[in-house]
Image (tube, rainbow, N blue to C red; front, side):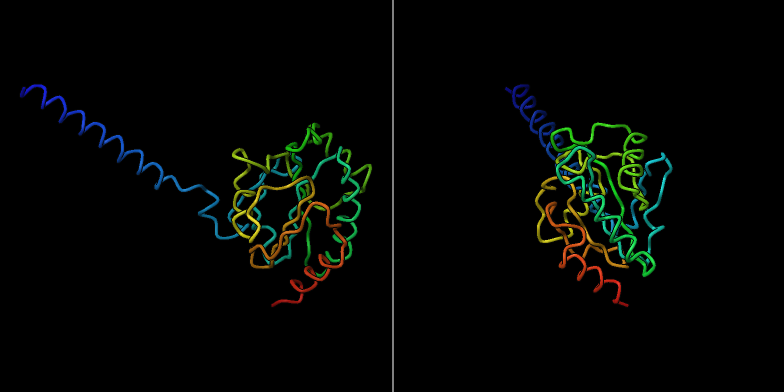
Length: 196
């Protein structure tokens, strides 16, 4: 009887220790994106494979966009380049992040993506290496971006847009179908550019 009770006691201790361990794991392993205070806490790899701290863009108004080369919205590259060219001297920059999360519409290598963007749309704003922007495999930058707006749903499609203020904080999220040079986007950019 004593040995049976001892076995039960040991089982309870082991189960309890495992439960505590699991609870500690769930609370202590805070995702990296949750620790970030701004986009400046992230370092990304640019389209040429160079590590680029986003702190490089500190003080600028930033538009972060997930892009694709074989999408019905791909012509938005033209609008993105247009607003970048129009506002860059005032402290605005577009950052493009190719992603193959939607029906395989960005299948190319970084080299192929760069060639496509520059030759087809004369893209001159910074482009980065291909990442995932949706679901559990989403890059920590995008996991963080999604926590910063009222709309915390997954990225809906290619060319979703996040507008970031000069302090590295997200100010607005615009849908994929909102044209880069739409009135509401222009007004939001100009508001952030005029902010101290």
